[in-house]
Amino acid sequence: MNSATTSNGRVLSGMRPTGRLHLGHYHGVLQNWVELQHDYECFFFVADWHALTTHYEDPSIIPASIWDMVVDWLAAGIDPAKATLFIQSRVMEHAELHLLLSMITPLGWLERVPTFKDQQEKLKERDLATYGFLGYPLLQSADILIYKAGLVPVGEDQVAHVELTREVARRFNHVFGREPDFAERAARARDKMGKKNAQLFDKLRKGFLEQGDQEALETARSLLEAQSNLSNADRERLRGFLEGSGRIILPEPQALLTQASKMPGLDGQKMSKSYHNTIALRDPPAQVEKALRTMPTDPARVRRTDPGDPAKCPVFQLHEVYSSAETRTWVAEGCRSAGIGCLECKQPVIEAVLAELKPIQERAREYEAQPEQVRHIIAEGNEAARAVARKTMEEVRQAMSMDFR
Ligand code: TRP
Ligand code: SF4
Image 1 (cartoon, protein in one colour):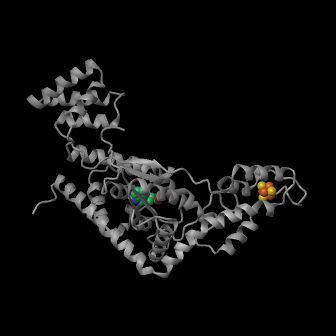
Image 2 (tube, rainbow, N blue to C red):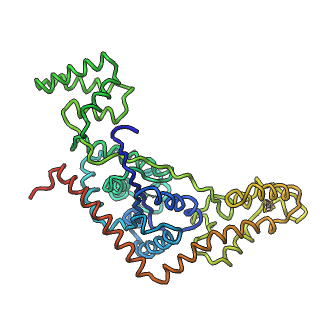
Image 3 (cartoon, rainbow, N blue to C red):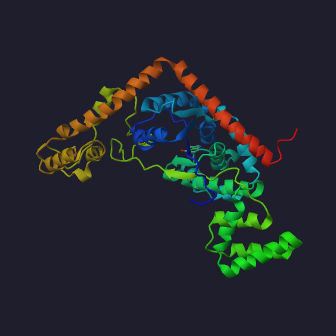
C-alpha cells in the first residue's frame, strides 16, 4: 500500500436506483456487502443524482426505484444496525465537494475516463453531451472522498472511477495539504531515484528553497518527470517536498474489485434486466418455479432419450452456482447418457433458488408492510452520513480558504 493510501477500514459503495433487484445483483454485489458489513464500518448509499445524469428526461421513476431498491437491500440482509444506509441527494455536502473538486480537475481527466465515451455510444438515444454526464465520475469521487473511505467495492467497469478519485485526491492534497510524516516519506521517495539523482535533487531543492532559484526548481521538476521508477504518488510527494507543501486531507481510496457474479440469466447469458432473463428477488415462488421449468436446455435434447452436453446448457451453469459436486456429477453423467430428463435435472436448482429466496422474501414482506420503518432507517442513515460529510467539508473548506467569516 503506498503512503498516500489510507489504512482506513471504512467501506463505501453506491448503487444507482434501478428498482427491484435480481439474483444477479444478489450474487454479485449484495452478498459482498452483507459480508463486508461484519468486518468494516460500511456506508452504502443510493446514487440518485447519478441516476439523474442519464435519466434526467424521465426522473419520475426514480423515487419508486429508490424505495424498491432499499427494500431489496434490507431483504438481502444488509443490516441497518451494522451499515449506514443513505441517499446521496439527502447529503447535500456531496454536491459541495463535487463543485470544489471540479475547480482542480482538468477536463482531460474526465474526457479520458473510458465510461464517458463508452456510455455515450451505448446510450445513443439519450443526449449525454451534458456537463452532468461528463462530471459523473467526479461526483463519484466526491461520494468517496467525503467519507475518507479506504475501500470501495465496485465492479470492473467502475475501477477507472476509483482511479480518477485517487488522482483527484492526490492533486487536492498536493495543492492544499501537508501530511504529518511527510518529510520521511519524501526522503524515502527521493532515495528511490538512486544516489546521484537524489543528491542532485537535494542540491536543486536547496537552491530553490533557500535562494529562490527558479531555474533550479524547473530543473528539479524535469528531473522528477524523468524518473520512470517513481510511482505517481511518490512523484506527487516529491513535487510537494520540492516546493515545501503536502498533507493528506483526502486519503486515496482503494478499489475492492467485486467478483463478477457467476449467476447466469435464464438463457445462459449474464443475468440482466436488459436481456429479460432475470429472477427478481421478489418474484413470487410460483413464477420463479415456472421460469426455471420453462428455461431452455441443451437444444440437442429434443426427446428424453437424446443425450445432451451440460457445457451447452444454461441449467448446468445454475448447478455450478447452487449444487454440490456430487449433484453436478449426477447431472453431467445423467445428461450425457440421457439417464435423466431435463425437468428432473432442474429440480435441485428450483429447490435451491426457492430456498435462497425464502428468507429474502420474508424480510421483504416485513418491510413492505411498514414503509415508514424503511423511511426511518434511511432518515437515520442520512443523519449519520451527514455528520461525517460535514466534518470533512469543514477541513476541505479550511484547506481551500472557504471557511472565512
Ligand atoms: N457509479 C456507480 C455505478 O454505476 C455508482 C456509484 C456512485 C458509486 N457513486 C459511487 C459506487 C461511489 C461506489 C462509490 O455502479
Ligand atoms: Fe441441461 Fe440438465 Fe437437460 Fe442436460 S439434463 S440438457 S444439463 S437441463
